[in-house]
Amino acid sequence: MIVKSNTKLTKQNCIGLLKQLLLIRRFEEKAAEMYMRGKIGGFLHLYIGEEAIAVGAMSVLEPQDYVVSHYREHGHALARGVDPRRIMAELFGRSTGTSKGKGGSMHLFDASVGFLGGYAIVGGMLPIAVGLALASQQQGSNKVTICFFGDGAINEGEFHESLNLAALWNLPVIFFCENNGYGMGSPVSKTFAGTDISKFADVYGMDSAGKIDGMDVFKVIDATREAVTKARKGLGPSLIEAQTYRFRGHSMADPLKYRQKTEEEEWRNKGPILIMKQHMDKLGFLTPTVLEELENEIEGIVQDSVKFADQSPYLPNTAITEEIYASNQP
Image 1: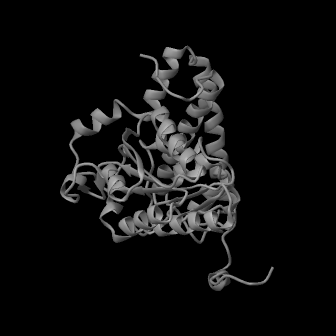
Image 2: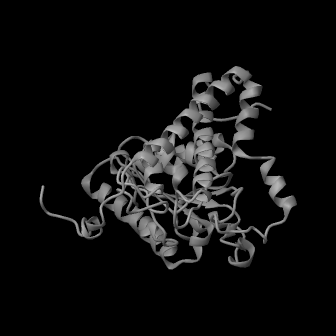
């Protein structure tokens, strides 16, 4: 069956979406390689398997909108339009990175495209999203804030406080839960007493798309578009729960001994890139030539990002005390 979606299914649009999915996948695979080579230090949390959420959600937003995310945010940053070279340079800890190498993998930030940070504290991005949405409302702008968080964040007080305030103040914010089934190595069933995260929308009196298939980019687009449209019209916040799966461990340090191989294989057989290719095949939009051209183009982008990062300088040691506090100077 051909995908049913409110998205305009043109060949150009579908190729653009597939390109984004492939870019995130290849970038993350290269980041894993660079980590193993010792080019990237600290922690590295890969977005492999969850690409459809970032690509689908970002495609609905306008340039003026805000995005805040968690520490598995490389995919969100790429889909939002942050320069891959600057992202890779940040992972390498170089001065040309998005935060001059001071933030690293978990703290990407680029205000020029409204990407206002990945946050390492579980649930820590939620109050920030509420503050951004409140500012947009008070300024009378039509900006919408989208906030990505994992299923582990629903057990944090910030989650409930943020949804409550957003609903009370009718704020233009979308709370987007990426439910990949695990909080680090703990399955959701052993950390969350409920069965449906999306039902918290009813508790706090906001709209919800319910549980959606986070592996299908078109399902993500449709749910996000509805929520964004309502928020932009002043109709308040929404909660989206997308069921997805990370194909790699929680981080590069995770040996993945807590998951069954049959479970992993089941999810890989419905991966976002595979589903997108199937949609495009049925629509007659995907040929071996198109796919080869996309892969070659993306390979060039990823290799260029590594070259740029590797050739970029580190900040001098004295920079450790710079830009610690905000300045009032113009």
